[in-house]
Image 1 (cartoon, rainbow, N blue to C red):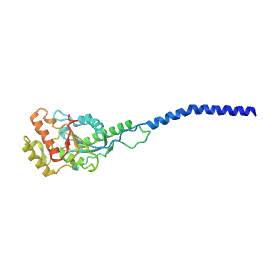
Image 2 (cartoon, helix red, strand yellow):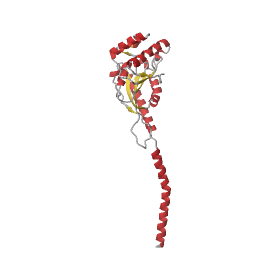
Image 3 (cartoon, rainbow, N blue to C red):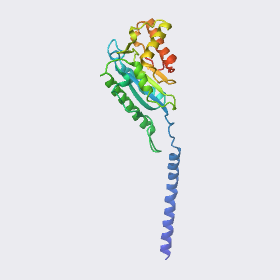
Image 4 (cartoon, helix red, strand yellow):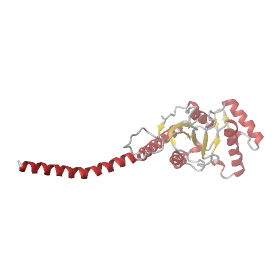
Length: 254
């Protein structure tokens, strides 16, 4: 009987010792889990408009839209805290183009164990792949309907949500079957107003009121002609801000 009692006491002591070792580990693990910080939610709706026209090719006279896209997209998505990305092409008839990519969720659903930084980096890579696919398709429908591309991306967003941010990778050389900007006189504000009137009368206004437009490549075809470059950029700022009531930001202008 005494032997059984001693054995029981030793078992109790060993169990207590094991508990003493395990308990702090449990507390540490609980603390780590409870202190795991979730990333701030990404709520900005973003859009990409990408130019597949001949002037966007990687040639001496072109501005190489693919290189500009690769150079600017990820930085744009990160800087603007984009939660989603929608796509629109610039083709000969952008609004009705068959080039379409599904919206990419840049802040996918997650739980407490999710490594959100890895998850979001993967989502951005998916967005970059979709952007290149949109560009590849746009190149098969040669043309430069910038106005239509802006109209199409504007249709992707809710009117009651956060302010959308738009990255527009294009030299903005509007050239479609109905309107060629290069044939217009835009040397004075009065001339530009008349041309904008004509464009709006023919095509209407893109629904981008209040949105932030970030151009990449705007007017690059005039890099050797500063005065023409100034007139060209003024035309687009006046069209986008003065008429469409968007805001132009040159943060990513290359």
